[in-house]
Structure formats: structure tokens, C-alpha cells
Image 1 (tube, rainbow, N blue to C red):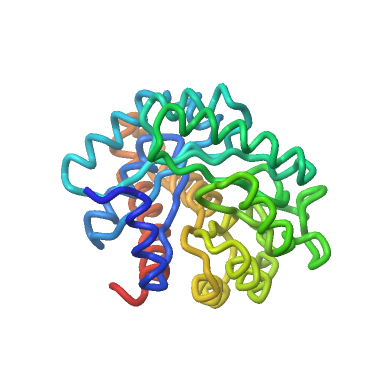
Image 2 (cartoon, helix red, strand yellow):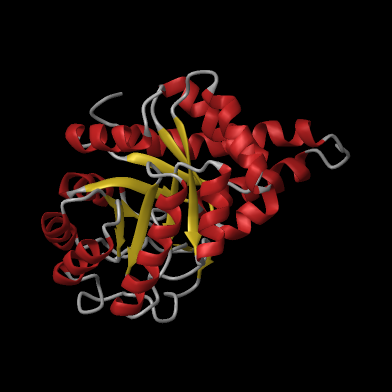
Length: 289
């Protein structure tokens, strides 16, 4: 099986993006695996600190390993990690990548704390990929009524190419997640803001490492294609998957009021999430599928 670094390098070469989907239960994971089996593409499963607490750190590693035994290229990312202790926990458990989230910190403090996270991670596993976040885009994968407070929502507050260059040079991170018009979450009755595609291209040219787009839910297909062309190699989807799970559960419980067997209720819910995942993966891998 290829390493995650090899898969990302191949994605950059082919001008495609790797789908990154967050999970917090087995149904979400089964939906991802079902689509990966069907399309035969690589994918990253993300679990934030809260999601890891719910599922179990060692447990999610074991689940991913069981699917890898089928020959599936499924990788595991410790998403939005906020302390070196949690970095250590994830890397020791066997995660392929870890995101140290200092996006809300001033640049110099973000650099300092990211350096510490990298030192901890690489001292345990030299091949683990460490991602840094530069620019705050909100903190929750949820349905939004308004833009998250303090999020970077204008060109003046987006990640600057010169700051990205300094951040990468001083930390030696493997992956960078910039703020380029993306926000965590998706709006209830409106599309998400447009991405700053020229900014993505300028950041990519200034850092020359793979870029990660967070907050992919609610972004238009057109912007996804342009972002990949400009240098995005990994795209995070969480809220859309959560929304599909909830609407699926609500529908099934309404249609089957007396059903008490979870696996019977959840079968169609998994199907609803698979629709979201397949659409995204076909788009992200459009030149290969």
C-alpha cells in the first residue's frame, strides 16, 4: 500500500484532490468505505478531538486497518488537534497524519506551537504528515445562520502568501491549510462564499507544499475545480455528511415509526451519505474516473 505522502504527490501530478471526510460513527465510515470500494479511489478519514473522544483513538485506528486489509487506500487524519498531548496520542496510536490547529493564533505564536507539535510527532514517527493551519475559518462543522465570528471573510483577512511562506519555512510542515474564503460549516439557505482562487494559486507558488482546503461543505463545484487547478490537493467535507446523516435518520424514523433495530433504520441512512460522498469523489477525481 502506498504511503499517504505518495498518494498526495500523485494527486498533485494528476491535478486531482483527495477527499477528506470526517466521521463520528460507524455508519459514516461504512458510507465512505462503500464508495471507495465502488470507485477505487484514495480517501482520508478525519476525526477531530471530539470525534476521537466519542469513537476511541485506538478503536478508529483498528477499524481503518481492517479496511486496509482489503487493499483499500484509506488513510487516517487526527483533525483539528490543539495540544501536543493530543498530537502524541494520535501519532502513537498509528494515525497517518495530524493537523495541529493554531489557526486562531497570531502568526509567531502559531509558528512556535506548530514547531513543538512537529517535534513531538516526528520524534514518534518520522513519516507521519503534519499539517498546519494559517488563518481562522470558524470552529464548527454545523449549519450556519451567519458567518462565524472572527473568521477570515475578506481579502484583507485571508492568508497572505508571504505569511504562508514564512510559516512553512520556519515550521517545515508537510501540509498547509490556508484561509482563502472557505469557512467551516455551511449556510442553511444560501451558498457558501466564493473562494479566492488567485490567492490559492499565489500561496501555492510561495510555499510549494500540498495545500488543504478546509470547510468544503457548501462550496460550488466550479470553485472546487478551480481550487484544485490552483493547487489544492486535499478537500475536507464534514457538514454535508452530517446533514445527510440527520435528514436520513429523520426520514427513516418518520417512515418506520415502530422499527427498533438500528441496522434496519441505518441502512438507508448510509445510502444517503454515500450519495454525498460519491458526488464529491467523482468531482475531485474527475480526470481519473
